[in-house]
Image (cartoon, rainbow, N blue to C red; front, side, top):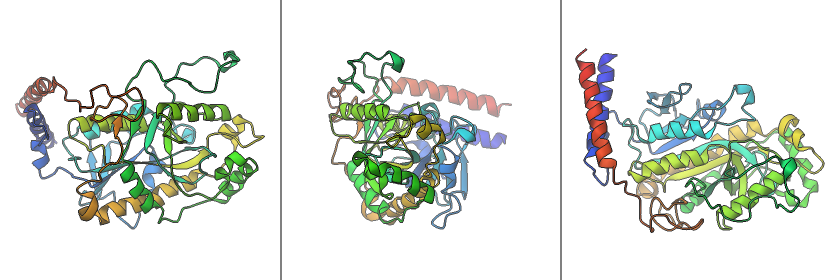
Length: 416
């Protein structure tokens, strides 16, 4: 065990020493280590049912290589990879006991912590890796239905709002914000590569999606409302956007509020359809890695399948929709993560040399609301960095200090 610890610390020193040199491309010493994994595709799941659906499948075996990564959730400490390391997976961690899973997905804290640990781990070279967030979500019946597979261009943190008790709302208030926030945190909106999204949609459309008799029966209730026609149809593959919030909500008014928030935050471009909790946190961690050339933000796919409706059908109380209705969408949504997602993975692997190795050039802005990776955001108040990428001025000094501390730790270990 001591020799393994020494080897790992030595690997970390190589990482820190290389980064302390301030190389623009971060040509890390650790990445020349024979045990560093260079995945072509990395699957990001949030809780066990999403992760388990990828195991024991005929296409590849994610359990052939299990790598413990410092900083991962204590419940899910390993990255799982194929033997050749071409496909890997992480489960970021859920927020509550299993019986609450349908009501509570993983909180943003777990996602941010785990993906940050992955991004900065010396055990992986992720510079050419395609990341696919692959989880379930709520769905707006205005856009799609139970079991549908969605691919997002925008992830919008819709719950960054002032709040007071709904019983105290003034009569002249509208549903959702009407003007852009004065205070910007930087995580409100992320935009990913739309050209890559379209390729992923093309791959996913070759899949035969799963459905259930319970989902068919429940979605039929939405057919009587013309605005919910999409919600009454069978599952399909849809291009629309994801809203993230720590709160699992239900209701027509909240759904409309977040529709309006999505339109406002994306300058009218985004289309609200799915509700999740983690995506903005995951994307922020990957973006911070991209600033240091550890990840490529143009290689991100956001896939969400629909497990439940975000609002009731006409005549159904919101409480019934949230707590009691047997919507029948959970199992199809889980299965469709794999059924559609594996087509995307296979598409990337099969066309690696011809298309994906060199990358898919974005035809849209990619990044955060600040413009941290350069370029001018097509949403929000504009770039905070004059359309230039962020280059942290203090990183050389910080890395040098970290390398010295790591070296001291190794010397202490080897002298024991």
